[in-house]
Length: 247
Image (cartoon, rainbow, N blue to C red):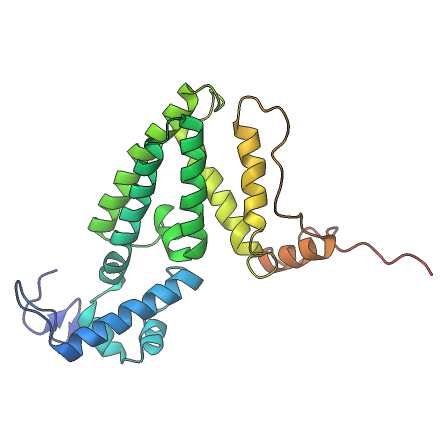
């Protein structure tokens, strides 16, 4: 973004302190920048990309003006944070392409990519195309799609992935798992692995027997708690813990 005069994105009187080409930030300014990045990473990871910039400034222990001098808008901040993380997702997909069996490679990618997304809600939202990520992040995200498509094609060619499975299905399945993970995070942090196993068993063409589950199902009380926390009041009223037996 080019800065002209004393106006940065309509903020009259605020001069950008971002360095020009080849000009490093002062030590105190760089320290503030790193505090803002660390705070934004933590807040976005826990709460997603919609957190107000004022709350990020407060979490970083800097003033709002300092935050905007470092990052004139949310796009700049998001770009600074997520370009490297998306490159890590691309690397996971490329590593999975090296697995000899196409199905095993797809499963490896799903497990590792979902682990990253579930640990970082902001990253999951970026991968779903939410927010205002910036051109560099968009380019990195666009790089993910063709590599993942190759993973799906290899898995289909192996004969183990059902032939009607489409790369777009993979994006929806990841959305399903990350949504379930968010809903059950406090109650059962590993429950998402149960749902991933169920989905994988539905994707494979043939299996001698269902995959052994390592995560237990939610109890009726746990399910009711999850539903209450994720749905508007009054929906699914029949989902509730069973009544205690008569004495």
